[in-house]
Image (cartoon, rainbow, N blue to C red):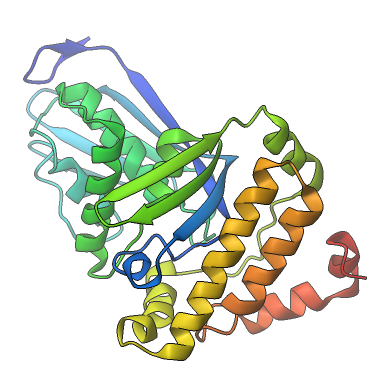
Length: 296
């Protein structure tokens, strides 16, 4: 055990899941869901994790180490890390909690950088849970999700959503409805019929194409904020597909779930440049992949 300014602590670890969108991604971004009505996002936690290990460090100093980037930064305390660079988001998160020293946070994502499954947001949540536990200032789940969203938005200087953070905090399969002043997140356990159905009928693959969600999201929702009727119509179609996906997932219906995912993607890929890439389209059109996903 080692001193950290508020007593002593033993090393511990926080591990949270990443998520995949089933339908309705982007609708969790404020203020888009307010423009649509009955907006919903459906996601599932996956066995790809984000991890923060916390251990004592030397007296009068703090360290933040990234296993993915192979870098470590040291400061007098946890408020001393720079909010810029590759560790900037995590540095901002630590400023949300009381400054402490004598501690090292070792962070790591299992997912490749830019894989598009919410890894950076999940790692942010894991760090916030770890810092809250260390400093005795842990918040309720909904407060943590909101704070994480706003920390991320401030860092990216862009609009961000909340589904990644909720998935990391709750796990399982989630149907998340958004309304003014309220988020209604319903959860199905991974070991139930819905989870079994997805394990039997779904798979997760990485295209190898890096994805920067903040830029793509802004291109998608800019038209909706500007009041473009065609863009709003498409987003309402995505919301309807998400509601259909939640009904199908809840019923453990693989055919209905697949149909809702396909309907959602048919609309989503037309919303803005960068939603789908030439490499991705080429991959999905390959005969071998089409046979794998049941497309002929």
